[in-house]
Amino acid sequence: SAVISQKPSRDICQRGTSLTIQCQVDSQVTMMFWYRQQPGQSLTLIATANQGSEATYESGFVIDKFPISRPNLTFSTLTVSNMSPEDSSIYLCSVSAGFSYEQYFGPGTRLTVT
Amino acid sequence: AQSVTQLDSQVPVFEEAPVELRCNYSSSVSVYLFWYVQYPNQGLQLLLKYLSGSTLVESINGFEAEFNKSQTSFHLRKPSVHISDTAEYFCAVPGGSQGNLIFGKGTKLSVKP
Image 1: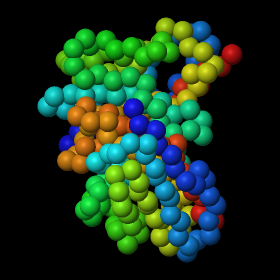
Image 2: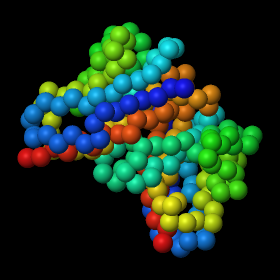
Image 3: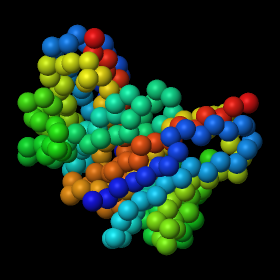
Image 4: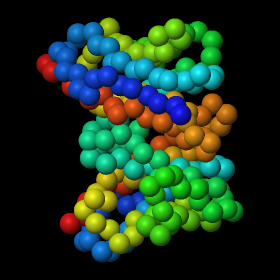
């Protein structure tokens, strides 16, 4: 299994500002995923980040709003840009365990935008 | 496209009662199925998974789920729940070309004394 940490664990931000969320894994992984969990909702994939290539975004999510970096095989960042109250969510990063599609999740970053 | 349906958004039960959380999936290809649990203010943890073999899979804390191909279901059961089982439970299947998971909307299990 993989151990994943995220920073910050929570934050309260003002609208119009940006927040960068960090995700650190204790082992090298090829693919990292960023999900959003809006209040009372399920998880929705934002994008997939592979080291050495541009992130692949799901429909409804764009790079200008959610830029992602993946500088090496153990680290990734997600930035939530120009925030509005609708961006208030839990943001989770995850990594694939391998061929079985099993994923390990970080503890999440709880973001509140005022 | 793959999809997962969790029929119950909330399930309140009394401690030591049995519980079943329902999950149905749509798939015409090989199936991998997962249940994740999210305790209050925490991230997701894998509870159990079906990859192949025995259709009945068990977790270390007494939950079990049975893969039923004919009914396209993967219901989660526990014969006697504890207060500590209070959490939100998500059923998931692989989806998309990125290797990501598709999650159901979740079922909030509330165990009352």
